Image (cartoon, rainbow, N blue to C red; front, top):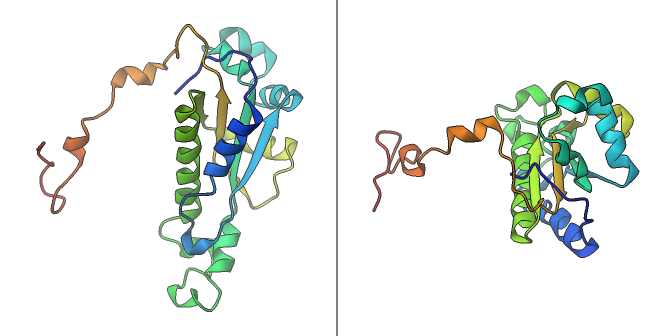
Length: 196
């Protein structure tokens, strides 16, 4: 994940490829309810004005994150899943009754896959990418950028060219990543997978 950017713009073809990749992943019932709010130019500054007031910026640990030339807000529509699963070919599932009928909220699963596709595409193009949460700023961001009621923002994706001085990891990056084999269980959830 990249938290340090130059202000060099992203080429249109590269940005199109990144955005298009979000729509190539899974979508439960082919619901296809993902929308992307793409912020460039002045709207990037407006985003930061809503989420990071000027008085907090002097102590913000990643000031060059604010130079990322593109921010993408992936937005999902839980109601679209309920509507899709109330249709004849899906009605037997019972998932068309309400949002609460879903034991796993697949709008977040599908949206997460879309975010991962964009992150991987950006990295494959040599660009920097970072996904971060909006948390308590979600209502203000939704209001500022006209996101309809009933929709959910998954977070925000920053895209740009990495600054030459590195990717400035967060403190949580010092935890490292777990060994994949310790969390992969072959033949059942009984023992960790052994390296071959």
